[in-house]
Image (cartoon, rainbow over the protein chains, first blue to last red):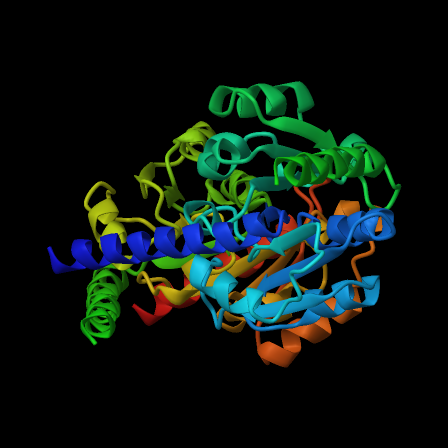
Amino acid sequence: MSEIKIVTNILKANDELTALNRKKLDEKGIYVINLMSSPGSGKTSILERIISKLKDDLKIAVIEGDLYTTMDARRIETAGVPVVQINTGGACHLDACMIRDALDHLELDGLHLLVIENVGNLVCPAEFEIGEDIKITVLSTTEGNDKPFKYPLAFEKSGAVILNKIDLLPYTNFDKPEFYSNVRTINDDTVFFETSCTKDLGLDELCVWIRNRVREKQRIN
Amino acid sequence: MSEIKIVTNILKANDELTALNRKKLDEKGIYVINLMSSPGSGKTSILERIISKLKDDLKIAVIEGDLYTTMDARRIETAGVPVVQINTGGACHLDACMIRDALDHLELDGLHLLVIENVGNLVCPAEFEIGEDIKITVLSTTEGNDKPFKYPLAFEKSGAVILNKIDLLPYTNFDKPEFYSNVRTINDDTVFFETSCTKDLGLDELCVWIRNRVREKQRIN
């Protein structure tokens, strides 16, 4: 009984902090992406390409979630935008409290786009709102078209789904129509992108879409 | 303060149940593998191949961990061995309590090998002992050679590491020597295997090794 109570409190506390994060970010008109996937699906590579293609037009910052290392944050720093590292110390997802603290270390004035790269994990991150405008889930073609059914929450909550490593499709048994159909069963209106970071496929389209979302948010503001 | 107490209790309860599971399985001389990886690294495919290659020599059973579906269990059933499905209902790992309940649904007499396929997650499963003799972590070549540093606990605790989808290596930037060196930094004495399920590479070697571990355990008994 007491365990259940505490879990409720944790989720309630997270919701309250999420609302505070969202208020702060909305006031500045910053569009916020929560980028989720399994380990190794290509979140950081996609992010590097997005930064490279958009950083002349948009002021971008990144929050990097990782258990222990700063490896991804160093890659993003090299890509040329401000980055804050959150090391969860073994915890399997980012929460709103971690984001609140990270926001204190970013210059938010004039920022257009904030991408939060979550811990590599297709299960837990989807359970926690952190103040984002949109969740985007990345799946690579090497992971199998059955994954939407096996990890439904991430796909259900995502406003966009990126099928990455599309260049490796011919070497796998990944069934693309089946994958799209599986996602559609769970989520009626998510947007799909197909990308390859090594072959630079689909990334321009993704960036056009992100730029439009950023502009929409600025218009609302 | 009360939160910390409860976490401690959960881990202690898990340790106690682990010991009970282990006692039960040791008494029967059953060798138990806890198979871990990210989603889509190929755990189920490897397991299908192991079963196909070993089921004439060894009596095998499988416990399948999955959030909601019985998709993998159905695949294992088709492979021709007894299988029990644990649906965690969204929880991100198997624990000793779930395994205790699953063991009640398996005929343990005469069983040689029990493989427990954990939830697809490179973070949380490594934190929970469930009564296994060995943890084996699978990583696929498409996931990147940096993963041992980013998800160290799984690699630290694994007695064997399987590098899967070795047939896709030429199409990736996966640095194999770097990967092995990264694992060695964390774990001095894990055993390495390289496998491809689509090309049937390395699986015979893996099966010889498993068969030897099973025999060792039976000799001890």
